Image (cartoon, rainbow, N blue to C red; front, side, top):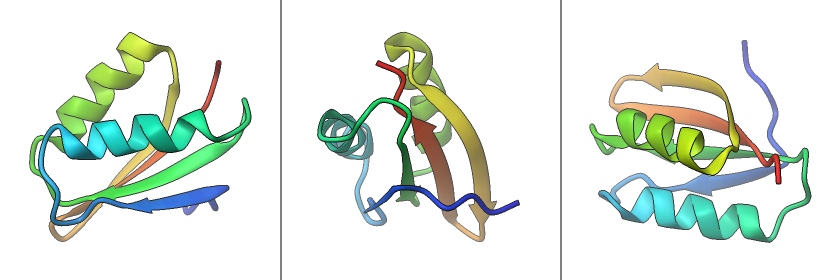
Length: 78
């Protein structure tokens, strides 16, 4: 299943905490209900995104992995 996000953020090559910080900053400029696609090859990014979305209340809609790259879809909830 491939969802089309409202905005795309490429964090490949960046390591913790940069993908989370860039995701946070990107969501700040978006409207509630919009979705952000974030790509990351940081091995820790799946655990980081799950804990960050739990902590912030944003919805982690999808997590996919293709080779070494994770694809996250996050819906802004507040």
